[in-house]
Picture 1 (cartoon, rainbow, N blue to C red):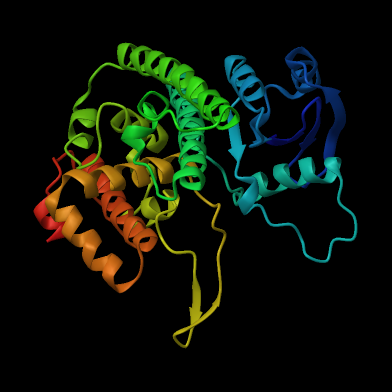
Picture 2: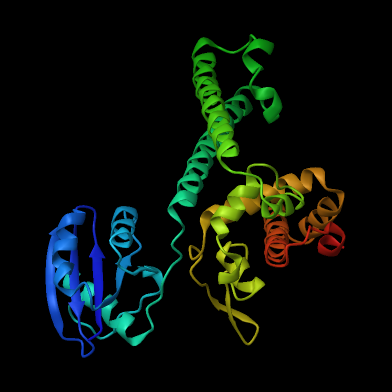
Length: 335
């Protein structure tokens, strides 16, 4: 007899529901977030449970990894794609867990990608680096805003770090505010450099990384970031699926050539969206063909749309570079 299990996961507890092939609920129990408790509930059905469906919440690692270590086949549910019956009057945790098991029994459960543990750790460390880089940029922008108010013009980023030594005209309170931002930036520089050194020490160069580095704007850090966030490129059926996953395509719905609405802008991988945006900025700065493409787009629309267009181009190129295992050709991409 084939059984199906759904788990509705929360921050401190989860609901376990096991059903048979006719949707009969064999067990329905709320347990604390303790792997031993979960295994105890599932033990009587161990031999017959085909798979366990777990919600993709922020804290799924311990549960999915623990179940896999004990021999259970797991499915990570793409909660954004799960559809409930629209006429449902009441829905609770037990019904949600049952619904996951029910969809799995029907073979229509939308699932997400489970990254291997050893890769996931490095990927998450690169995500931590991303957060720190954004915080550094926020502090740099804060200093530039202060200087714009005091001086009446924008100070280039390269000059921000030395501004207190170069100019003594600021009042004490203004100097203190700038110094506070610069102290945070200096600390972040040290931490980010340490993370990069550790990542580059752990990640061994692979042909995939080397081919990604042929993309204009992609270097030693962005190449492994793109590779780890992408996972197996074979899971994307087409370049359009990959571009959508990278959030570099416009979220727009049209009918009769008129805009009728927008799709889910947050559907996809926000870290890949950032990676290709960063690559686009570097490409425009250092690659002549990318710069000319950017200038043409910016002249017709605006700079933000132009950068997104470059990021879209790079994401498409990254798909073929990873799928076909070939180096990047800027002439084909930007003309």
